[in-house]
Image (tube, rainbow, N blue to C red; front, side):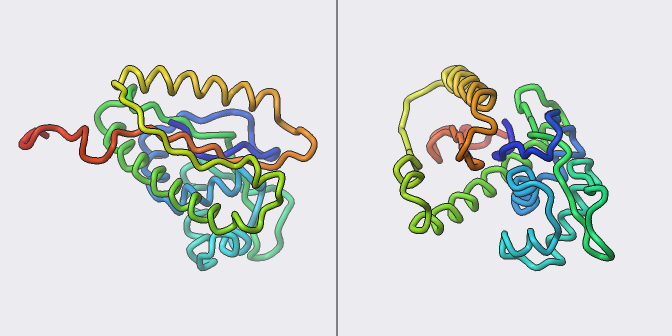
Length: 203
C-alpha cells in the first residue's frame, strides 16, 4: 500500500518504508492530506495548507509538527521569516506492506490503512466539488469508475501488482511532460462490505 500522493520536484526521490512509529504518526486522515499536499504542490506553510484544506492554521501547525517529529517532512532551509516556517516532504512516497507486518506493526498498520481510506474519500469529495470548474481537456479524461469483480485474495494480489507496474511505467515516462499537472490515481480494492467478515465469535 502506498500513500495516495504524487512526488513533487522538491521531494527526495527516496521512498520510505513505514515503521511502527511512522504508521502511528500517519494514522490520521488529515495528517495524510497535509503530507499529500506537500508532495503534490511542493514546500508550503501552515497558513497556506490551512487555506487549501479549509482547516484552522493552528491545526495545520500541529499536524506539521507531528509529521516533522516522525521524520516525514523537513523544514525548507532558507525560506520563511519569523514565525512563518516552510516545510517540504522528505520522501517521494510512503510504502506499507500489510502482508509483511507482524505484531505491533500490524496493529499500527490497521490504523494507518483506516486513515488512508478516509483521506482518499475526502480527496474524492474535494475533487467532485471542483469538477464543474476544471478545463474541458481534463474533464474529457477524468474517471470515477467502480467495477464489481468476483476475486480471491490471490487474484487481488496479482492484479494489484500488475496495476502498480503500469503506474511505475507512467511515473518513469511522464514526469515533467509539457502541460502536465499532478494527477491523483486512487487504486482501491476491497471486499464488498459485509461479505468477508469472519464467522460470528471468531477474532
